[in-house]
Image (cartoon, rainbow, N blue to C red; front, side, top):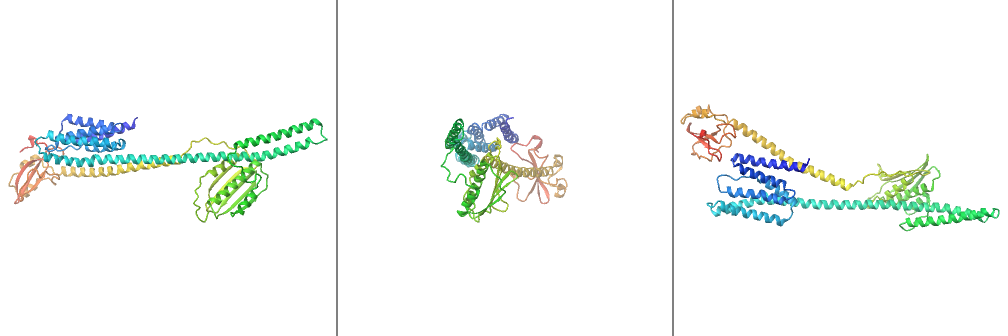
Length: 525
């Protein structure tokens, strides 16, 4: 189901009901009602693709109606005005070219003046121009203002969209930086592998060289030891070349075999309040040892950067075939003012994952920050990364903002409509109650005679009088007190009864026209 088209049909139906209600009360010709409804349908269904065309069509119909009705006793039809304001707003939202709108509005205003002078030749020119100026002021309020509001809203949406796009671009760049940091961490792991494996290959080559020069070994064994030494040297050289290709930065200045104790001592010597707590003494594999060193190194760097002056505790526990590294700080006495990019923690997480461990980093409930890494002492295969869709915090926030804005707009529109509906229902109820309480039946009206005392007449009158009495139709003398009553329920008669009293007696009774249509023959005296 096309909900957009269904919404257009609903809007058209609502606006068409206004036209039918007004035209029915005015008893306009059917061709006029059909023309207005057709123009409304075209305007509503064109408001997305050609909004200015739809607006021009509906305004043109209203201009012709105004030109034909101004200065006459027919009254001015206004049922198309809500549609014109709505389409003007829609045109401003989608057709933001000021020149096109100004040309259209100028032509319509000029056409209103020209048609008014042409269709009402007996009307004085001064009055026609005055009426035209009044219509011009109303057009500024009912057409130009909604168009300007729509144009402002369109520009606001463009600016907001540009801001969200920029935020998403920054977020994508941030994700790329994190991915690069993970790759750099893998490069550091490759360097550690080079240092570890290269050391072992060097020992193999050294032992093979010793066997090569051992005079007690047969010649073929010494030749085999020579080949083994050459193969180890070649492997060491090739390993260096590979790591050189992977390395994207300068060579590390930290000693390759630096222990956690040496690292903590170096940090303490630089002024960081740090202490080391070690539990257990199990041997770690070279890759796990380097991972532990890297976690402690990055965590101490973050503590010195983001929590200057804090006390840091490094705990390394080697129990139950697992090594747990916990780095906790007490928090900075003053805000450091250095924003965190998260790239360092992303690299640590990748390093720990690749040796089969897990890493968590979060604020402590007592204040400060804590990093915890748990790794098998012998290392392990890395857990495969779960394939998941990349979530965008900016996109989620934009969706939330749009959802809240949509709810706010619905509330802003629904609240006045609800209040208007309640007030309208109360007013309609009051009108109906007073209308049915002010009915003077024609047979009772016929029994009334001029000269009857007020007391006798009041015994025959209904409980209430009309609230919309046509007092201006037949002015009465100042010393008369006139009352108006309905001959039938509301909306069913075009005349009313007028009873006038003076000196304690009924002095006049007559029928008064209530609308633009003459009273029916049955209602005439």
